[in-house]
Structure formats: C-alpha cells, structure tokens
Amino acid sequence: MAYLHGEALTAPGAAGWLAVCVDSFPLGWGKRSGGTVKNHYPKGLRVTGASHK
Image (cartoon, rainbow, N blue to C red):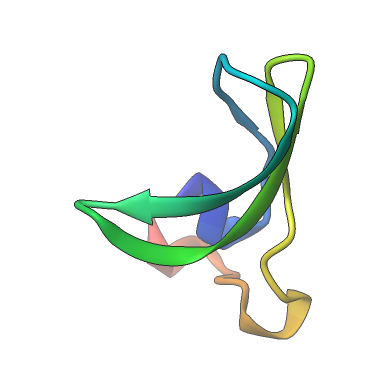
C-alpha cells in the first residue's frame, strides 16, 4: 500500500530501474539508489484518503 500511496520503499540491491511487484504481479516502476526505491507510480493513479489503509 505504501507504493500505491506514492511513498518511497527500502530495498537492498543494485542501483537502477526495477519493476515493483506484489505476488509476482507488476504494479509499476521504481528507481533504486542507495537502498531506497523512489516511486515512479503516476500521481493520478495513486491511492489517497484514509479509507484505503
């Protein structure tokens, strides 16, 4: 859910672009640098509001 909200994620590994997946289903793209994956999910598709926890 953090990814769908537009938040950055923490994940070790090589720097570069990667697919963000849940249960092998791709949700979108992220760019990893220094252990942080910056979110590249389109802003218009992000989940907003408290009812989506």
